[in-house]
Image (cartoon, rainbow, N blue to C red; front, side, top):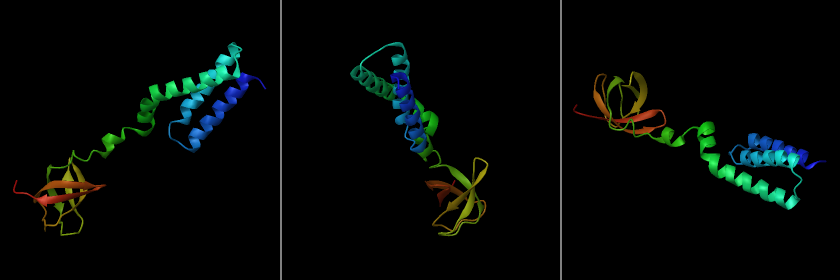
Amino acid sequence: MSDPLIWFIIAILLLIGEFLAPGIVLLFFAIGAALLSGITLVFDISLITQLILFLSSSILSLLALRSKFKNTFFGNLRKAKNNDEFIGKIVEVKRVIKPNEVGKIELNGTLWNAQSEDNLQIGDKVMIIERKNLTLKVSKTDF
């Protein structure tokens, strides 16, 4: 079997491995293997040189492109985890909230589940003090 074919098969296997265990690491080794497949198709180089080129091209592509690929495939998780955008907002109660029971508030035109340690009536103004998943914790305010 020729060197270009071997490197091409390695690249395909690494891509399959990336699909089975996504982590955006094997993809860059697949890029290195594909690159070596092309290089060995044109140049006759020793096995040691091939391995050095494979490792260096894989690591360089990993260092240069991982953050871009990660944001593309997984999105920017830091933005998704940023709950501070809701904290401190004053909103209106739309369904009665009793201590340790879920009611509803309106935030940006959308109804949200809300909990409070206070008894809150429809129309009360409350401040968002915490967010846990899709439930907002609120506290009565004088605004």
